[in-house]
Image (cartoon, rainbow, N blue to C red; front, side):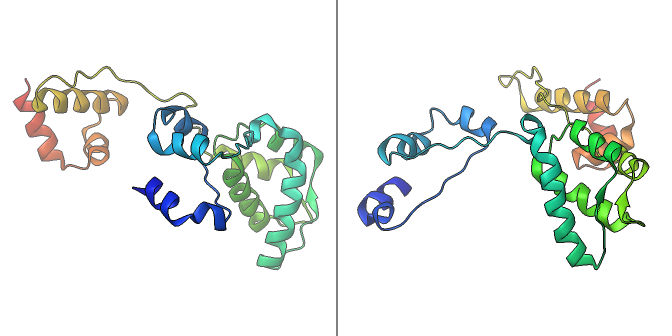
Length: 188
């Protein structure tokens, strides 16, 4: 539908269109008709922007840019980071890419009590960053089973991940503890 609109309206000939995908999505969309249309029929130019972890040499410049932005926003006068603090930021695993870096620098500027952000402040802020698994978890759930069996399998997985804490598991599943308890009883 979108493809036919682009072709019939000649929108792509009168305007510059920008499409973006994330790495994981573009791999899963390789057989997607819209992505195929954009790449091949519209002759889209692909520009690959590497992850922040792949261009750590850019981190000090990005930090300086964000410090300037947040200095003016919060009325601060932070000049920069101590060398060991900067090294800590460069060595960090930025799973959230630039958005995560920007948010961390914002917090560092707000917390700064001197002209230079020190190592301990950076260390304290980074320890609160929740590490995300770089590889998605894959579960073996047979979708040919009944809905009750699939539900039971999912509940079992979540309970195991929450160390069998029923309160956390029920909260994560979006059901009450009594509903969780009832479903556990049904599947015994």
